[in-house]
Length: 260
Image 1 (tube, rainbow, N blue to C red):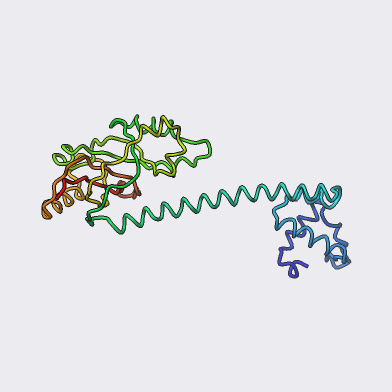
Image 2 (image 1 turned 90 degrees about the vertical axis):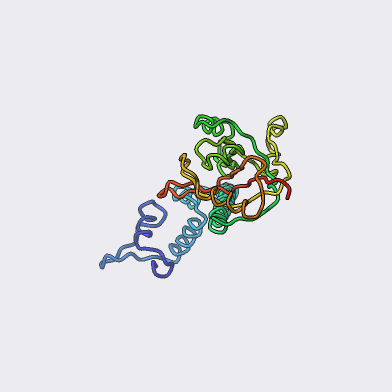
C-alpha cells in the first residue's frame, strides 16, 4: 500500500494511530492487511492532506461531518491558501526588485553616463542616525510591506560633494515612486519634492560612510571635468544593495549638471 500510493509506512502507521484507519488487521506474520474500504479511506486521507487539511479535521471529515460542513472546511482552506499565494506573489515581486538592484550595481558600478533627472520624489531630514529611526517609525506598516516600498535616499550638498568627496555626513531621507506616493495622505505627499529637470551624471558607487574620499565620487568628478561639464546641484543617492563582509552600501547616484 505504501508503494502503491508513494507514501512511507510510517505515514500509514501515523494515520492509524490517529484513528483515521482501522486497527490494521494484523495476521500471524505481523503484516497489516487493508481491505477495499481501507484503500478508499487512504485515498480520501491523501487527497485531503494534499489540500493541507489537518489530521484532526480529517478525522472529523471521516466520522462526523456532513456535505455542507466538509464544503465549508474546504472553503476555509481555500481562503488560507489564497492568502499564502498572495504572500508568495508579494515575495516574488520583492525578490525581483532586490535582484534587479543588485544587477544594477553590477552593471553600472564605476561607469558614467548622462541621463535625465529621475522622476521619483524625495523628502529629507537631518544627518543623524536618530533621523533614520524616525523614518522607520513613521512609515512602517503592520504587515512589514513598508520595507520594500521605502527607498532610502541620501543628499550631499554641492559644496560638500566638491570639497570632501565623501559620504561622511549626508542628509538622510527617503524617496517614493509615484505609484507608492499616491497612497499617502495628500498633506504628506506635498512634503515630497521632485528633482529639478536637469541633465545628471549617473553612476553606482559603494561607500562605508567614512570621511575618506570616495573613489567613485573622485572618478565621477574627474569624468565630468574631462567632458567639460560642471556640477550645479546636490548629489542624490538612492540605496541599492549591501555587501556586509566589505562593510559597503551601494547607491545609484545622480549629480545635476549645468547646461552645456
